Image 1: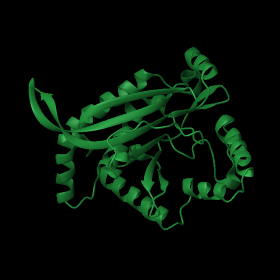
Image 2 (image 1 turned 180 degrees about the horizontal axis):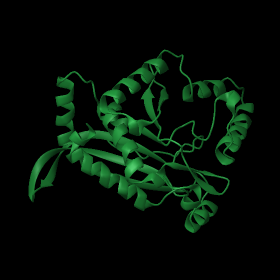
Image 3 (image 1 turned 30 degrees about the vertical axis):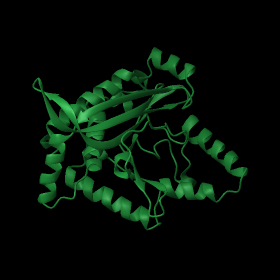
Image 4 (image 1 turned 180 degrees about the vertical axis):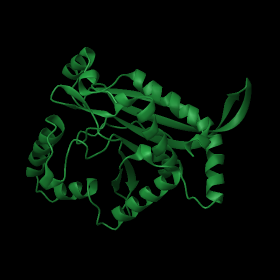
Length: 265
């Protein structure tokens, strides 16, 4: 793992000066990928009794990709320096029973296997929907209890201390790692084909990945046009932390694993 000194290159210092998070420090990317093999792989695992979904698979792909392909993305900006994170954690967006959005924080996601990912994420979702959750959703509930306009002031103070200055607030259970290394959301599950995400101003994540819908499209395979199952992936990256090249490394890794999903086992 690279050190903070190695990550804080001259260009990163310049980028962090030019760009302010997250108003103008964003790189957007989009790619369409063939998930035909992946869907077959998922169907096979479900026949064996493992209730795996696209979200579980992409959770593992992105976490492992951070570890092996683009570790520079597993970092956050604090007081003029790029700081590597101690672990690879993921915030997975979920739909609450009331129709609102929540998140489940999956710790050490890169160290999980497929079965563990299904178990950990399932337990997190159930806990969140029982309204006894800890972490991300609890903090949101605390904030909503503050009257307006004091809510804006409290939020500004909170983000300044935690995400701009990089301080931990144990009495609130918050730290620069409260939202994990990245955010993963599946809008295809709610009927949307494509979406361009926002870098949450209340987090220190370096990127957000959006999984879009899957549909049949003509696709070139071995110089022949065939019908394949295609998914849209979109991402936004904090330009202070990384460049488009880092996103390119991740997408190349994603494409490789989708053609060889058995490597997840």
